Image (tube, rainbow, N blue to C red; front, side):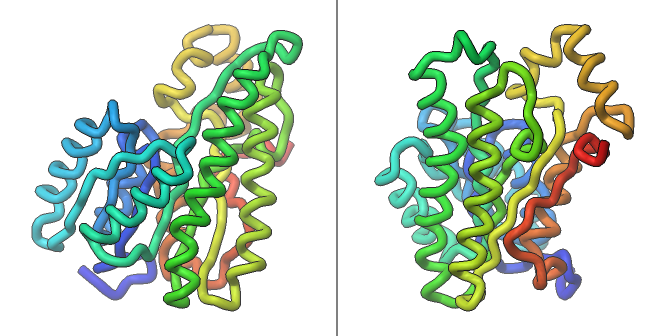
Length: 260
């Protein structure tokens, strides 16, 4: 299948944090649209990324989808650049980057340590920026590309016990605007997706508390949590030719939370 506005046939995509709940759903969506997918993951989780890559290649064998797992720690800037080189050596020049790797530390602000703050900002903001920079260099030179950074609805609103996380995700949204402005005339689009609470390993601790879960559900007008595939669909839209006029924005997939 080829030619549709949501297709990425023959394009090369790199997903960071690819073996997690959101990351694997995003990788599946990109491969389903015909993209060759580089699965970036921490060295200790590289086996999971390799298994996902084999599954995707087998599932889309008729489309000749190729995959590769690359070691990628987004807190290591030199390692990010190395991962981009490894991905391109295996699959070809990058057309799409999804900067998905992220963490959250939930603590009252008076208890948040400097180590907590640095850890969240290093992964969720610094890591996203340098992933975009490493992939963006080649895209700008080639005059084409689409970058999608995973932010959060919490980049637009405040939420208790998430000072570092909200700060990082807000930074991602404004960072995307800057990169979009700088790279637009070079044919590179840069956008973000801002999901609400999605049931993944990252949110499992918070959602395990019945009171917290119910409080979250009360604030989502659609009355339910998000699913990884729904976020992946938003990413696919922004990565694809269907969004050819879209850059510098954050597509909020939040069930209506921020509309209230």
